Amino acid sequence: MSDLNIRPTAHALGAEILDVDLNDLPDSTFERIRSAFVEHGVIFFRDQKLTPEQHIAFAERWGTININRFFGKLEGHPRIAEVRKEPGQTINIGGSWHTDHSYDEIPAMGSILLAREVPPTGGDTLFASMYAAYDALSDGLKETLEGLNGVHSSRHVFGSAMPESGEFDGRIGNAAAATQDAIHPMVITHPESGRKSLYVNPGFTIGIQNWNSEESDPLLKFLYRHAVRPEFTYRFQWQAGSVAFWDNRATWHYALNDYQGEMRLMHRITLDGSALSRA
Ligand SMILES: O=C(O)CCC(=O)C(=O)O
Ligand SMILES: [Fe+2]
Image 1 (cartoon, rainbow, N blue to C red):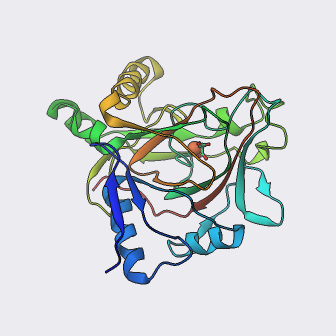
Image 2: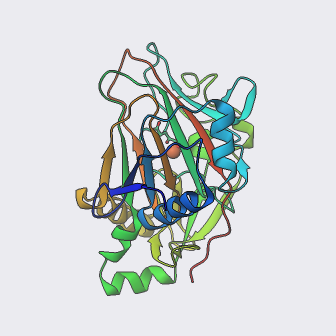
Image 3: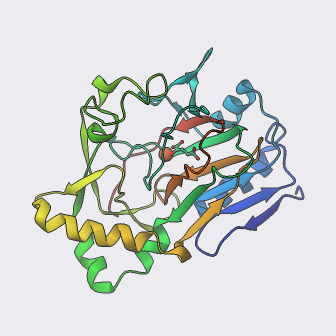
């Protein structure tokens, strides 16, 4: 047994895993990290020295790498997406609450984000636990949500009509691929933890199946407000070499955009997920 040190970051979610080198992980250590990921929803590592190849090698231990069709790629490494904001750019990527890929029929499991360059202050990422959000609902609303499906889309975010498409030039593209919608249960049973998780998000959920927007908007709005109660969240402060690996089935995230005029560059590898189901 290694002396792996797993320290929860908040009651609701997150764990920082210390004393570990992601380039040198015996299988037994990897299995403990896998359990921590399932238990805490997002895990963090510090001071990792990963080349792009080593980042890929670590990701491949978890499963199949998913290539996001909208993100700019790291040159020479199409499996690594860049999450970049240059000093002259004002809009960041992921700057509001969302869970990635919910617009896909089989949404990605999660992303392994590695900080390459961070601003002197700012640029933190917030995470929220959708287990905690679900657990805190009343039995009555839980029961109602059991029968409902959410409609998710990428059109309004990555499609050609998105308002900021000019500013995102070079960072986000392929708007023509933002065509499909996906339907998912509003409450899913997590495939690995077996826990129930609220599965709608302000970024990509556009409605409730078979409800009109006058009916669904107030309920979704309530859920969006409820889900980010401070006690369900954790705020992660990056340094170069920090790694965050989040579970899209159990969390939301929000990249703060409070570092205008500074550079921030992250490398992201996303992993394939499995179909989501209610039970
Ligand atoms: O830059 C970040 O902290 C996260 C950006 C984001 O939303 C993502 O990579 O999915
Ligand atoms: Fe994201």
